Image 1 (cartoon, rainbow, N blue to C red):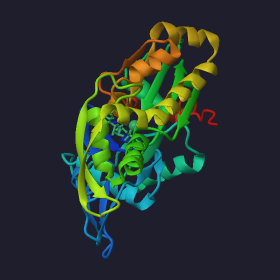
Image 2 (image 1 turned 135 degrees about the vertical axis):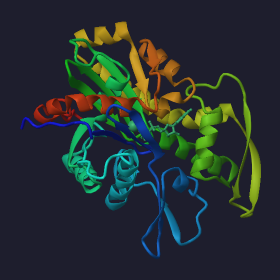
Image 3 (image 1 turned 30 degrees about the horizontal axis):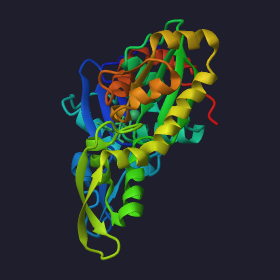
Length: 346
Ligand code: ADP
Ligand code: MG
């Protein structure tokens, strides 16, 4: 003890969709999709990050594109470690050759099991960390969003990522109540794929589905009636085909997932002690994560809870910023497992 040097330390947001690395004193230096392309024959890594992501749905037989994180947890351990190693290297590329290995603060979904958390810690170490400290994702998101997490006041954060939606009420530096559901951005994409397959017998890829969501996706009812041409493979003829879809039908296809997210928020509110619930009614609910950029999601949550809803300034970065900021408290995290404590998940 006593000899702490945090100059090397990193905060990593290991998300299902995106991985971000925060370097203390510098801020976010890596923002890349959590994607790896591997050669099946040699087992070699062909590409990591955006270049691997551009290959999704476009690979020849000998290359597989892997998203090693699924539903917020590690689905492919070795590939996750390879990816993290690549990003840690990238984040530290200007370091001296003699630089010590970094301590790494890495965020984990609040709902994961001990075994899943252990896997994240081990993968982080395998990727080059001296030591790895887990921080609960909604806690990091709340710090990144600038919420007063250390105060005796209730803050509610809803982080809608690719694989999970995390809802948490935080007060006095701890998670008071939370809920994690494995429904988020990826489910929205899947819902669009399924809808278009059923309705039009058209097969589209996940990249196309995501761009439909980004362009004309809406939570609740679509206000206008935007149209979009989409291309895919006709399941009946096997040939490429173009169809026109409307924002109204896409909104309808997203309904189930949006409802699940709203339900998670409501359930968490129901389990929140009254004083904290009163704080949240005053201060509002804060949304983070890429999924919070879905058009109208803030309005739908606000309508259903009767509580004001705000989207944090940089929804795609708040977890990384919070993870990075909390490096300052790494000693606290070392000694006080309360912060990353496991909330109840049903
Ligand atoms: P994770 O933390 O799981 O990696 P992110 O917080 O990076 O996830 O968010 C990624 C998700 O956000 C993806 O599902 C992506 O499609 C979605 N997303 C990003 N931008 C938008 C947008 N403008 N509208 C709707 N969804 C978006
Ligand atoms: Mg995230």
